[in-house]
Image (tube, rainbow, N blue to C red; front, side, top):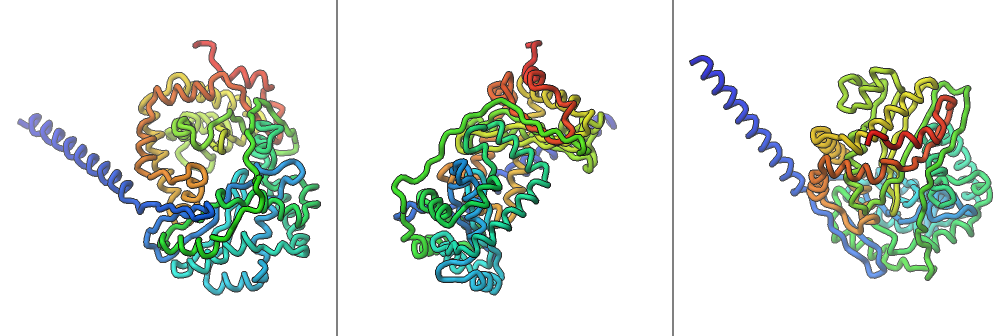
Length: 468
């Protein structure tokens, strides 16, 4: 009787747990479907307006422009980033002081950044101040004064910023990685540009870049938080409706080829080596991007300062912790319009480089040949969690809207993205990884005491297994 009652309690407990799990799953799916919708409209001049109204008391609005360092050549490399610096230095109707006082008096924050394919100007403010924020952003991109004294002043600021970037070894390694992977193409250029270009950029160069690349069809006004879409469209039409093309032959993105190659900057005075290795990935719109994102999550990241390395779900993290292979590593999946970089960056002591690289390539080969359903399921759950955590706040949501409208011409709903991730299985992951990783020539960038890094032919040989 006791055994029977115990078995019955266990069965009921399992059934109750299954019911709770089902309720949690249903609640999660229901929450994804009930996220506020993203509305999108197009002005007569082709500027797109997209927003998500969450009813928050604050809002983020910004202009996402499909123009970055990839649209530059060797002569004007750095001009897009230079323009970002000039954005808040005054317009034809406002001095820099007037602009700063206006923004500070309403408690808002203006910011901007430049990437290889996009330039972004955005404002964080109270929901009631959205009209003023939109007017300021429109004034900035249409009527920037580009005064000569401010250009000279920003020249020295950018040169100091370049020194700061050079002290960030992760940034340096990724710049080298792009330079060797996309050598001879615009994607191989740095965002800040070379020093000689910064010293020689003129007002005419800045204005020419605006006239050539700030085309209305490549501009998105995005909003998130307490933003009413109808109001945002009216504001866009009022302040950006007259924004017209100034150059009939506006610049288009040039295709960039990937080259398996390496670059090493050996410096034995440095205590640690910083190394990145990557294969060619895919563009934003490629359907293989989702399996590669899952694979990237499966490899994961780890830092020596984190606890639980030996109990980490990532095999590479457990190996790194137990055998002291590195100080940290992080996998990455960097996407552009038509190409990308899929790989890993790690920091290690000189004598551990070869063992760490061997472990990395072994894990890559496992992805191509023997990954299990349990591992893929775990990575999918982690990817979903990361995806939702990255959308916490009006600014990340606004950034997600602006980027996706530029990349896909729509914002992919969370429930659709969730379904795409769910559709990935072990066989699908192996097929995609085999396609992009197995027996492919990698790009390698290394800075520091790199003597123990195997030569390129040996690294290339690690990209396949003869046992197949």
